[in-house]
Image (cartoon, rainbow, N blue to C red):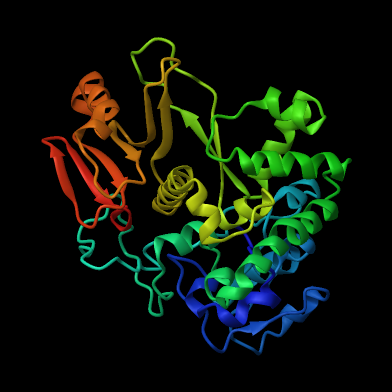
Length: 385
């Protein structure tokens, strides 16, 4: 999320539309770059082309001349600014152009941008579980199999790289890029402790967060672990999934789950080799994380809705609940390619409990085509998310 891999390393391999965003129009070919170290170069009033800038966070003084030009002529000038984190900008009280700028966040690729490589006999998706209306990619990414997605993730730079280069790129992201970002902002006092925390957080990605256990294993304090988790969220490296609060059941767990934003980065941060073998050693949890992050990205682009989960102390669990206003969509994730009604027992209990708020429940799995398991339960192939 944010800037992803360094622009100089991956930009030539990434289709032009992706550099701007899912809902933003591509920059005209005649757009012109501006020197980040010399913001005054924006002042060429005789050049009507829109101005783009690659990395705003490193140069928080840059919006000042932009504000001046917008004050002069709001219709003539268009600027595209990007960055990976607003922490330093907030700390330096930079001018973030309130009321003058549209905010677009970019996330790893969705199924709408990188189609599924369906297995033989697979049914094409005609009605996705959570559609993104208005998305039209002129040059979509090449289709990818489920194993490739779970092993190497959805970062554009990794998706377009040669298969043999993907593990090295992911390890570079986890250790070079993240360390560079964190050291630059002087946010980590003890890098050795943070490195241990990062590995443990990656290994436990998708699980209910146990701060005390991670603090003990990383050799640090509970407040430090909580602040490190918050830092990963601020740097767009992770996603917090809160517990569902609308259940009438007793003994419902309230601790959030934490998901790394990309399975490939998760493997690398956990010091695992991003590969098909790594996924197949324990595929169910990895598929569950991928589905959760895919749903979360869709909700962010839609600009509405909330992703939660439900688990009781007795073991009843709903992997994900999409909350869209008063409507609830419960989703279970299974690695199986032949789901049956036994896989839906927790969904059926949730449907009975919530009544009219829930119309239908879903199991996302590896079945080749949608299967009606019950009047209110459907199993969906993973590419129908």
